Amino acid sequence: MARRDIVVLGSLNMDFIARAEHLPAPGETVLGGGFQMVAGGKGANQANAAARLVAGPGVVRLAGRVGNDAFAAHLRASLGAAGVDTAAVVATGEAPTGIAMIWLDAAGQNSILVAPGANLLFDVESVEALRPLYRGAACALFQLETPLAVVRRAMAIAREEGAVTILDPAPAQELPREVLELADWVTPNETEARMLAGRELEPAAMEAALLAMGARGVVLKLGAAGCFSGGVFSPGFAVDVVDTTAAGDTFNAGFAVALAEHRNTADALRFANAAAALSVTKLGAQTSAPSRAEVDAYCSFLVP
Image (cartoon, rainbow, N blue to C red; front, side):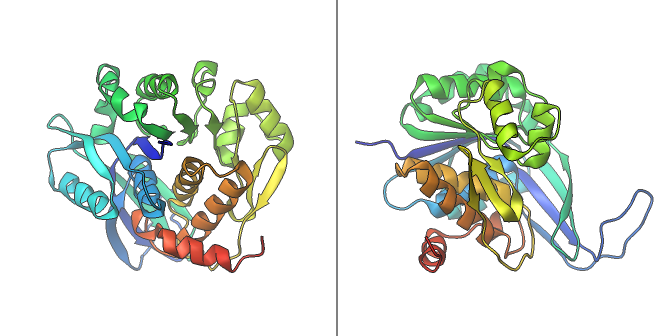
C-alpha cells in the first residue's frame, strides 16, 4: 500500500492575539481592540492544517512537548478535534506549555513574541522512539521552534525510513550544511532565505544558492505573490487579508498533503498556495486552517 501518513515534529503553543490599528513601537503603548486565545505553535499549526486537508486514507501524527497545565489540555483537545494523532505529544512538569504573544495591525500583518517553555525540553535521546512513526510516513514536516539537535536527528531517521523530509527554516536562523542536506525540501520565506544565504538575491539566484548549500529541493515562499521552485513562479491568489498568522504553516501542510497524494510538484505548489490564501481570510493560527472541501471548492473556480 502506498504511504499516505504525515508526521510533524515541532512546537505546541497557546497563542494570545491582540488587534490594534498599528503595531507598537519600542516604548509605545497602543490601545488595542479584540483579543483571542487560540491554539498555535508552528508544529501544531502544520499538523492541524494537514489533518484538515487530508482526504481519504492517511493519518497526521504530531510529536512534541507540553507542560502539565490547562494550556496543554486545550491544545490536545483542539488538535484531536482536527483529527491529529497526539500520542507522541509528551507532557513534562519541568516547564510550562509554550506561549506566543501576537500583535495584529489593521492590515493583518503581525509581530510575534514566543516563550518556548516545554518545547525546548524535547531531547535527542527521545527521538529514536519516533522511528516507527516515520517508517509508515509519506512526508515528515519540521520547523525550528524545538532544539536543532532534535530536528537534525529526527530528519535523519525520517530519511532512513523513506519519508520525504520538508524543513520550514523558521524562526529564521543560520543552519549547518548537514541539516540542509537532510531536507528533501527547504521552504523559507524571503526573510529566512536571506538569513540562510547571508545576502539578498533574486529568487532564481536564491534557489541556486540554497541548493549549493546542500538542500535537495527549494520552495521560496513569497507571501501573496505565491512561491518559486524549480526556476518557476507558482502564483498566489488575491484574497481579502484578515490575519497572516500561520499562512506559511498552512502552505507547508498543503504541500506535504499534496506530495503524500503523489501529485507532481507544480500541482502540489498550487494546492499549497490555495490553502495558504484561504487561511489569511480568517483570524488565528489553527482556527484559520481551511478544510479540504474549502480548498477543493476554491480550486475549482481558479484558472488552471
